Picture (cartoon, rainbow, N blue to C red):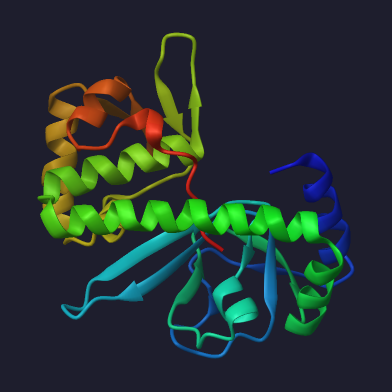
Length: 227
């Protein structure tokens, strides 16, 4: 995101009260009407839904600087998702009408928002492809590959530390499979020395090998984000 755009977004949202949520707290309940647009100042928030089989599916993970739920805010589309704190978070909440007015008066911010939405839709379509044709191992590898692009820091030796603590359940929810199945896939990646774990952080040892476990070109992933 452009630095000037980021600065103006922060200035706008900081006019509104800063609220803290504990880890695993519900911010917007699944399928409930939101009470405003949230700007994430600190921490991580997941957007999820529940599949027919009862499994949770994480559709996106928001990092600081994101604001949501914009489908509801701009498109007046009923909210069909839940938003939950993955970590302790701090959020500003602004009335929808104020956010719309701000975007109307700041076309460059709106243009940046459109680019981010389109990038996110591309990421969701990529995931949808794997739900149709990928097995559990492919789904888990894809989830870790995307996480490494969005939350990773690369060291001089090429290893990528994912700066977000992900449990096997989190990976299962990202991949739309059971925790037991996700754990088997993760163990395979660990055994083949494609990834390693440092406490609860995953480290990608070889991004090309991880990419080969999917049919995604790692260089084609453009930091997907959906708002």
